[in-house]
Image 1: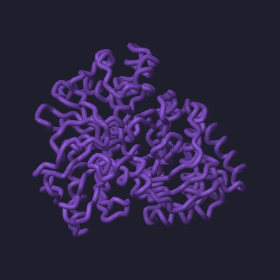
Image 2 (image 1 turned 30 degrees about the vertical axis):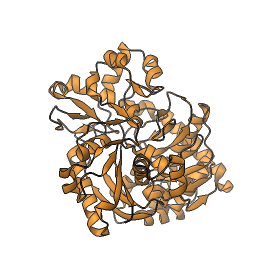
Image 3 (image 1 turned 180 degrees about the vertical axis):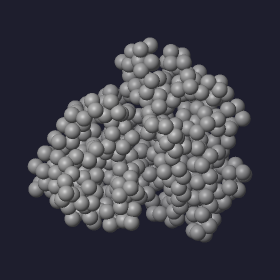
Image 4 (image 1 turned 90 degrees about the horizontal axis):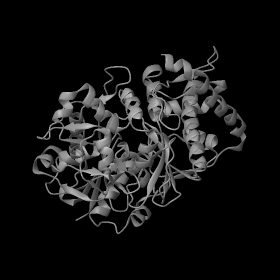
Length: 493
């Protein structure tokens, strides 16, 4: 009988499922879409029940089409998007839609908190700045604006821990998702009871913490029936999608770096010692004893998805990449700010907005598509430079996510950043990372290092084109100056 490991990736607009053989080869794939709702300016929320329904459909469809026996699945790992605030009552029912990572409704909560507690004091505990996208201000938003939800809340869960709960009935919180809460002690990897009290977040609402690869429970009969699986399969705690993608790209040792090309953009530098910077994001890696110094941007693959849906719906990703390749480096002077839902690191501005600059009658879709790709690459460069100023130099980047399938976009990122880029199996890096967690947790792999060596293969490498350096240096300077020039106007909207 063969052995398979399952990875479940809970993204922003869709979920992906995959079965892997222990050597990392993909045996089966599945997926399902769900919606994001924007009821007010600055709001972005989802229904966790739709997540669960989508995952059940994706797994069941994958199993039926693959013909693989559920008895051959050794373990399940789940990764999920960051900074949810899923409110469960004492009966385990979801009390309201959850604000997701792009939601900035709690900006007033952040301002009020900063007036009570110096931001530096919170930063010294959690290693991250005070920003409305995080989980903790959303909890306090419930208390102020939805007191009926806050009073009934028994536990606050993250996206992957909610799916683990639906699979096993167990309430958990993995270490890699702790960075969304200012009461998480980033040095020690535990909750700070004193900070919980100062913030006004009841400690009882926060689940007990566990390593991402620890078995959280086993698949219940009810969950197995919905997913088309066999009851009793071990399910590990799982982790943040970016951290699992980092693992799936083979980044397990200090100094290695992942470049993220999913819905969001950014990078994750693996470090072996605590090193926080208020302009960046610091979190625990899913690999024990490691942190990830991250740059997270709202405009990644999602910016190109928006462009396709609004301006060229008849084109697919491959056709858009071909058009971008036909345009010159620098897009004929068109510069794009990819701040489509405010912006995270390093500018941390929830009021930042997307901008196309330099349009003229000669501008076509090719230039606009390429400018979109270049704007995302400029955001990546800004984060890499900030990380270097913080003492974390990233050399070779391991690219992952759907954007890494575009050869021209990968080349643009290499040219703009001046870094070599290696591309593993980009489409499955995140689900592979989740599956590796299950493999380590159930003993299929002896260590994370052994798992990465056994499963991760580089499919192609890209080097910067020196002929484009001057063009992109000018474009990057314009990108930086545009935001500074327009920031005041953005804040008056």
